[in-house]
Image 1 (cartoon, rainbow, N blue to C red):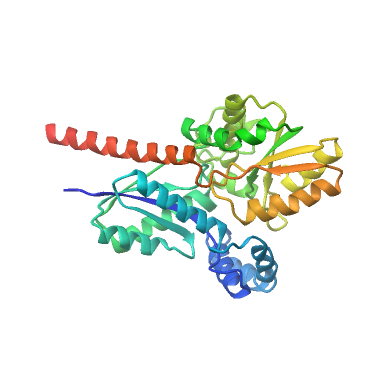
Image 2 (tube, rainbow, N blue to C red; image 1 turned 90 degrees about the vertical axis):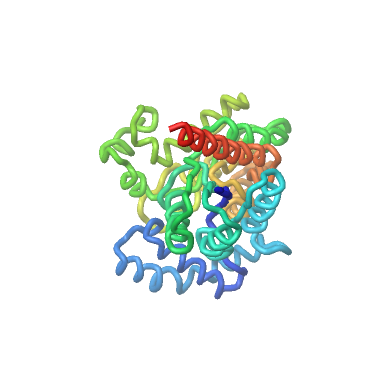
Length: 348
């Protein structure tokens, strides 16, 4: 008799906003070869000699601004999401973070202890990127190999334009859109341009032409930028939004990242006469440092300083009931698919 289970995985957060814990988190995050994809000796030097001496203190100050009574907003919201999904489904639901805690190792051990041998992994990343979706999936695969080698795992593919995800985005943004605005900015997490080229299975499509994301290609299955633009197209079609632009935030280092950069786009919009700006961050399903502090605080200041007047950040999906509906449908499809496969095997 098989038993099914669900694992939600998000990026992670320091255990506290102390410089020590932030340093530990940044070291694990930046030493991931899918995040900083340089050869190990180069990565080790850059992280330990160039970034960690100064960046943890700066990041700790930012984390202090958003830290809540239950800790990191990202982890706290993800825990609430797990609890609410558990109330809707009969199988065990666990939560893991790619970096720090709760760990993937602990989640897999917990699921194994509950007798789970068929696992549905739901990455809380709507879009594919080697530095988010891929590294999270591979981290769980590693934990399964080590702690539950007989456990079968099904992974939910990127759902950047899935109707239930778009519906959840529209529902979460509805009240803000109804209040009126001059412009809607879609701010996605940034990536080095190199990552797109590296993830292109054709080796000749991504960023090779000005409109590469508009031309059909197998590369789009792993192209973060193309998937982000498809999210925008589906959202604007669903909501009727016509006054919008797209930007990418959170760049690190001096190499080219996806453009336009969100901080520069915010200033440009204010200087062009936009007085009421709405911002939505569809690449994040839970509010975190990048949404609350980088956009909600620093982005707001940039907008005001450049002449803007009203700035509103649309919250992430967090534990919105329509987002929970979407997750429940992912689980239901997993259950139905597994039942169909068993029925086929029984007849063969």
